[in-house]
Length: 253
Figure 1: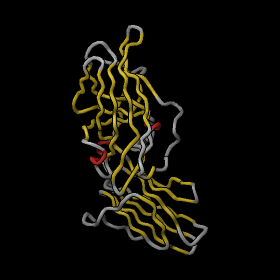
Figure 2: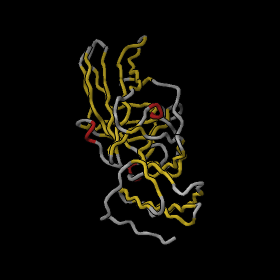
Figure 3: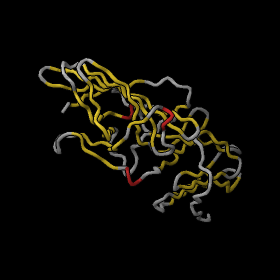
Figure 4: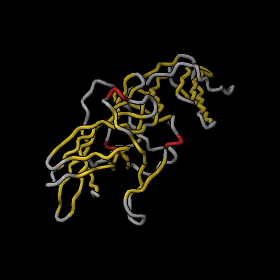
């Protein structure tokens, strides 16, 4: 197949379902994807990203058409799949006075998955990140016993409409301080496989988090739980299995 140059002037593609009878080109930031019918029972798949990496595959089909879904997925694949935990470092600390609560919105990195759709089944064909330079690991805790996480320094969002297309989704975080004194929080660590993603056009929103700051014995902790989002946006297929856990604990500084 002829290798395509990435066309910076091409309109970017929306998330969603695509029914293919012949060829299809999808354009994302610094990435081009192309499906090409090579016979009555097969398509070829081509993808080139901003780093110059090329992926090519052959997709046999049993019918005339091929159905795919382009959707945001959890940011757990680049640079390697090593963890299901997310470490979000806020660019500004959040301070809560004693016995108070607040609701904020934050940006959260995403990746993008390409799925083959068969009836109600979704097979994972490929994934990409449109922001590889800011995809990295971080360690929460000590070097000996800490938790390996995907790490991102993130900014506050105004609301769900403040999604950064193809790069970041928006999630709501509810913070409750049940302590008898004021407390700042500057980060959150959670198992992101508990959180579903939802899309509309090129925007992404993510299941939320509730953080409860409280005292357990003589230690101040933050209890972190997932909150399910109620929305009419389309839910993304899952690239990896969901976990059974729905909460974890962090120490407070």
